[in-house]
Figure 1 (cartoon, rainbow, N blue to C red):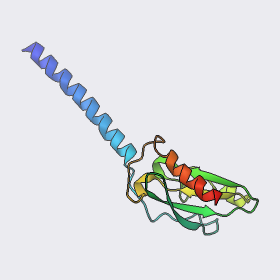
Figure 2 (cartoon, rainbow, N blue to C red; figure 1 turned 60 degrees about the vertical axis):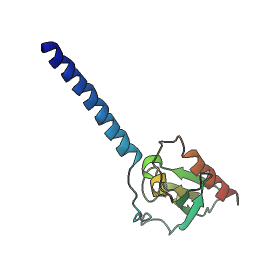
Figure 3 (cartoon, rainbow, N blue to C red; figure 1 turned 90 degrees about the vertical axis):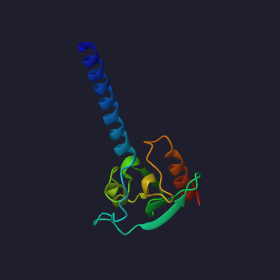
Figure 4 (cartoon, rainbow, N blue to C red; figure 1 turned 135 degrees about the vertical axis):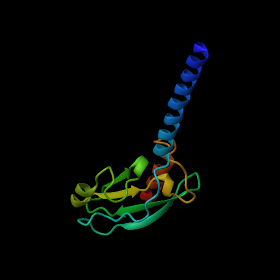
Length: 133
């Protein structure tokens, strides 16, 4: 009886541990989509674009044209990079750099889960392709 109780408690502990881990991973990869994000008040209004990656998804992007001829590609992974999400871009735009901010995959059309960089590279390729035009 004691042995059966010990095995049952151990099994419950292991299942609970893996269950909590799976819930944590789900929340990391499904951050939700906020289409109401606004640009920083101190910055000029960006051009809103929809870029298509090689996986066929359309991603929302904001483009601040450069004043000095240089452009920085900003990707924010889990939360996207639009607005004042990380990485910060205000100092770049104010210094004359152009910035292309790309939203995360959960807001893409069709939506996809965030992979923490494993598949987001195709989103960056779409950004680079746009900048090469």
